[in-house]
Length: 435
Image (cartoon, rainbow, N blue to C red):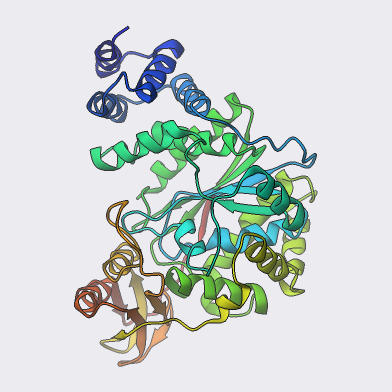
């Protein structure tokens, strides 16, 4: 078999066999196939698609490229959550301790931010001392002590995915639904999850710009998951404005701590908490600790309001080497930029994409994998879509340590805001559920 034969087969719109896919992945990892040949196949898949059988075969081959975590010592169901990426998306940091405190085991392998979207790992590493790479004994200890673990993808877990994703990012094939499906499910199955709840973002700040694309991705992940023995529930959520009241890394950790410590009270948090509660319902049901959504929501609310979720949050930080006291440290920044309302009215638009780009400009994210992160940079959000504002009110505030970047970031933020004269009816954050 030759790599070029597999490429031509898919280029011409034909279905690849299981053996075609298995051979191609093995040869690539062993060095027998070049990056440019893999890139050619990725583009052929992007243009011609994969059947559900091809997607399942790719997922299995990627899992087989490395080792899988053995979590058989945990008799309870293991449930994970995955987001397709957004701006101000700190949902995992709230959700994992919340659900774990209700009795569900959560093994979570997360990713870094790239482009305009933030990454859970970058947020976690803004906590002083927090370790995202643990050995098997440490993983076991964390799951036993606090019910969840938050990890980076180590070199021996689905190495094929790490190599292929790096190529997808530079070959214009990131948005391919079969490739997204295989990337997500291979990691989740390899980490030992029995069930998965997907938060599929849709809108200006998401990779899936429209509801139809988001729905197609949800169906692909569900159907492929069924073929491979993992149960998947998907929630499609709106990503047209940043979630919550902050964008960045440490600034988002501080917001999470505030939510978990003080409970659900601040109206500014309503968009992200709507999503948190919906995802927690799905995870508690799949984890077998709740009989229906009403019961699951009551459990989540109780854990949030009585401080149990916050206790689990702190316990996890400590068990993964982090300094609990550090989350109370103030942000360290040298420069600020205020974006004020140009007129009286109602906030019609806070464009998530433009604000996400602004956050990258000031160092919150990276355009390239090797770029460094400024954990202390961030953007504060003082008005949300639908809020009334007076002329001169602060809508966004930029915090950074690079004087040269602030002017560009301010321009992006100014262009992200639209104010209108009439009241704005804000739509729900949860758009659709697919089971």
